[in-house]
Image (cartoon, rainbow, N blue to C red; front, side):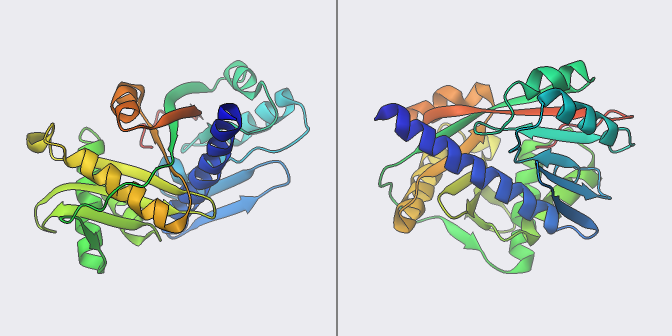
Length: 260
């Protein structure tokens, strides 16, 4: 029973990640989604991972053939990101991507949780365009402090223009913490949870997690997320269970900053 539950959480997390990345891509102009028979391919003019990626693999073709095809498509200045998630087919694509010159840039822990949660009374939703952009900027600054200002602004803009819900603690002018919640058919995805560095270890992050779980419970679906391995223990302490790993590969003619 436990194995089946974790497998179900893994699959709904996969669905949520793909939908969220596609929504971020669609929020920027001149970004196109090509739903192919074997996988989904996104192309755009902006130098961000979610404007140049392949994901949602589901094919009986040989992994080596898929990897060669992806290598050919990566021979551009912007290159190509490949996101592999639990539930993708074919098996073994990881190895063949490495053989074709892709590098493994990120391994993100995939987590799921099903419980009631509680809504934190200080949490507000960013609803108007100006507030959404301010919260998007705060998130980008917290997650990508060493990236260029242009890259952070693009991330903030796509976040603000996406269909996801943005929540924050504090004021729009001076946020203390924030998170993005992305609703898909079978899950609520928690993204970009961040707390101002001066206010950490005060339980604010826990309050945001519980609020996210509260909203997921209202929809009758689990809460899912992906995080860096350094945060694994913290999320396990929040009663999340790891359901798999998101592997992010990259290959291109020039090096690109990892913005995921």
